[in-house]
Structure formats: C-alpha cells, structure tokens
Image (tube, rainbow, N blue to C red; front, side):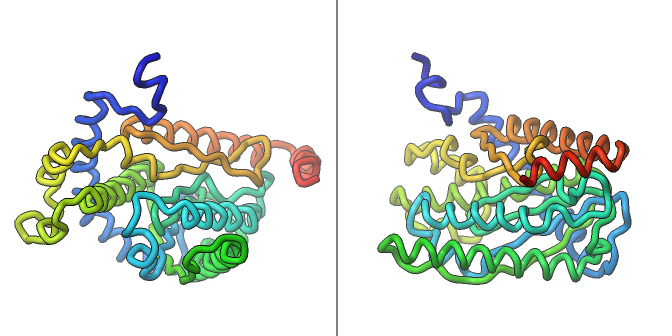
Length: 294
C-alpha cells in the first residue's frame, strides 16, 4: 500500500512546495480584500449580477477554545451544525424558480463564509439586513448546538457570539481568490499554533523580524518535524447538493491547488444548475421542490 493510500491527507513533496508557494501568494492579498471590505461596508444595496459574500467571525473564541489543541472536535461539530442550519433556514429566500440564494459556503476555526449567487432575493440584496440576518442566525444555531453538547459531554461550556462582514465581488474568480486568501490566512495561524504546541518558543513568533514571516515559519516546521499535511484539512468547503437542495456536501483537501480547482468546479456546477432551474417551467420546479421537501 502506498503512503497516499494509507493516509488520505498525505502530501507529497511537490504538493508541500506548492502549498508553501500558494500560502505566501494568497496571504499577500490582504490589502486588496481590505479595500473591498471597506467599499462593501459602505454599500446599502448590492447590484444584481454581483456576488455577495458574508463572513462570520467568532468574538474571542479562537483564544478561548482553539489555541490549546490541534483540533477541538466539539467546537468543529458546533460550527458545522451552525453552517448547515443557517443555510437550511435561509437558502430558499428567492423569488426565482430555483428558490436558491447561495452557491456554497466554507468554514475553518471560528470563521464561516456564505457565498450568495448573483440573483435577486427576498432580502432585496440589502447588505445591512443580510449581514444582521446571517450573524444572528449563525449565533443562534451555534449556541443551540453548544448547549446540547454541554448537556451530554463533560467539557468546558462553549459560548459566544459572531460578528459578520460583507464583501461584494464582480466575478466568481474574485470570490475564489478571497476564499483562497482566507484559507491561507487560516493556514498561517494553524502552522504557528502547531509550532507552538510542538515546543517552539511562541515569543519568537511575535518578534517583528519574524511576525508573519512565512519563510521563517516553514523553516521551523521542518526543524520541528511538522508537516503541512495537517494544515489544510482544517478548511471545509460546503457545496450544494443539486438533487437535495436543502443539503450541503463537505469536502477538504491537503493541497491548495486541488482545493481551488475542486471549489471552482462545485460552485460553477451549482450556478449552472440554478440558471437552468430559473429558466425552466415554474410548475415543474414547484413539483420538484415539493418532492424534495417531503
């Protein structure tokens, strides 16, 4: 049995080098997306034909629940539930045959991203309303699942709230670039955490000469025997099931390049399916949705 067959998150040397290159590339997008964030925040109504992306972030949760272990199983379970339920209760809010407002979502650490399609919806593409709705809905379902787990498992109670930020993009390529940037940002944080938990002096990571110096981080990873194979698996991509619209399928990849190609393929497939439904007979769509909802 090959290493790849034995370990599904195996990363060969080529993928390892490519991951390093792409993490550096995507982290350099910070100023580009900060500008888009500022412009989007000042926009009241997003034009039809542009993509709305809403990012929710936990308030102080990373430091409270995620810094002392490589993976917090229960926290990740709660995040997954909140993503799926937020999607489920909002995805049909559209005056179109498809009754679909999304093309997908992502999640990592205490962050989740919801990607809206370019069509009109019952929110009238109102940015303030959409941000408020997603943040409050996500917080509600996160808290609901956290309470369930606290009653069943003897762990430190997980509580908190989420804020949300809007981004408006012209093209799907811009959306994918942004998600790659957030994945790289998450990878950078994860690799510094893994270094710290492997015994590396955390203060050295905070020196100005080393702060966000990815080449330095990568050198230390090799010295401490930490592989990038454990980094990307923390980033989840949710795609819409085109047969059961109320369900999300999740995928992960240990290589940035493969993750991006997979993401583009899934998002385009959902866009194409939504377009076909929106341009098909209304009665057929209603009959199909009634069967799915049963």
